[in-house]
Image (cartoon, rainbow, N blue to C red; front, side):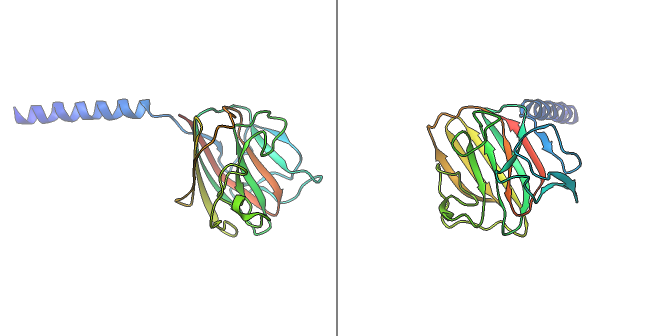
Length: 196
């Protein structure tokens, strides 16, 4: 009898675990390092697949270039793995108002820019929304970003360290996500998104 109760309890626990897993939002991989993915493009850079990552190291023109998701996102989490050199100017732009015009006014810009003239909005910050002091350095190594946007609450975690936890009422409620190339060498080997 005890054995039967243990078996029934085990099956019930497995069922609860399976139900909980089914209810948890699923991650969508937008960058896997093997193919370019289904992005719109704003501006022109030499984006390519190289060494298991999407890489850019040259602009065609003077304006930054972006890979823009075709899907808009409202409340979500992003997990991203990126590498930059010391000269890089990059970032992950979220909730972009217009998928053809990407900037820190029409989007929230989670910055990757170790040499930004005003370092308070450099790597780890959300430009003009949340400063980071002291600014962490990302150049020359693989880094992880975990970005959560839920309503007007934003959390940014760089390499396991929280750099931003802020509420902001700018009211950019939803929109696509964009990966930026501005200068230097920029690599994204993995980017995943899940809706909340």
